[in-house]
Amino acid sequence: MFAGPIGSRKANDVGQPSLSVIIRAYNEEQHLGRLLEGIARQSFRPLETILVDSGSIDATLAIAARYPVEVVSIRPEDFSFGRSLNCGCAAARGDLLVFASAHIYPVYPDWLEQLTGPFHDETVALAYGKQRGGPTSRFSEQQIFSTWYPEHSAPRQTHPFCNNANAAVRRSLWAVHPYDEDLPGLEDLEWGTWALSRGFVLAYRAEAEVIHVHEESTPAILNRYRREAAALRRLRPSEHFRLDDLVRLYTSNVVSDMRQAARQHRLRQVAGDILRYRWMQFWATYLGFRVSGPLTNEMKRAFYYPPVAKPGVSDVQRGVPPIDYRAAGVRLPGDVRE
Image 1: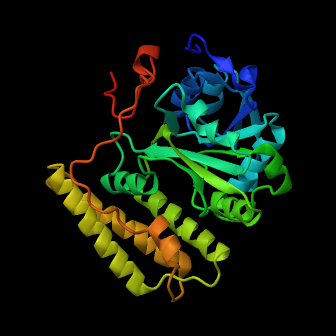
Image 2: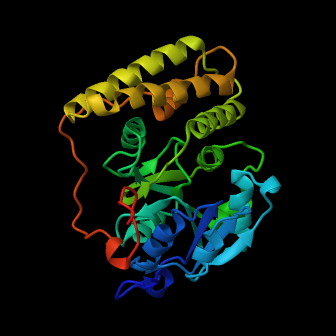
């Protein structure tokens, strides 16, 4: 199963910084193999791949053992997103630290090359890439991805929005400012804010595309958005999310999603899921804040506002053939089980 692409090379073989890929995982047997196979097929081979496992009891570690992966273990009771990342970063040797959620997988074999390309600019502290949903993703989450991760890159971003499911940072800067281990989420936003305050910029790389597979239950979705809202409240203590924010943003996002679904001739199929998903998103956000007052406009745009309707828009097509996971015997989300 493990087979790198012909002509693959380590980044530092051609004068580029060395790369360490760090993956956070807990019971990811359904997804981890795809990601590791995608890493094996990259045009740039990382110096190392580190799996930070927080007590998996399924086949996660057995799958990791099929690949050249170093495992760092932490106790479940010690887990936070920041602590897990810090443990992986501390074990890493690369100049650049690439973060990947265990339930993403790269679309193209130049994912690592594209994601780390912006670091040629010495003022770039962090780069993050495009995320898209898979065939099993909820419709509203697909709309969120298209809003947060547009089709065109931004080489010098001066606001802190980013996402560690598909991102890279300079190890030298992480050593100065490790991730906040006390936040319940949004440790990436806190780190990006710090980097900007030190005169660095962030970069968004649309060509570094991954599929992000969320197969969450209703309680898990509620918990994720509530957790992120609580983290945002701690990062921005003067900002709030009122009941009227909930009503307004729920309504505007539902209307936007319904219109987009109608254009795709899918409205009957997904209308109920749109109503449920958006309610879970904004009700959980309200619970995470539990106080009155507005969020800043910048953060509302980044996290909540619906996209401007663009009928007929499709993803930008690249001249790079995508990774053929099925040829490698790797099942993709939505494949029918035999």
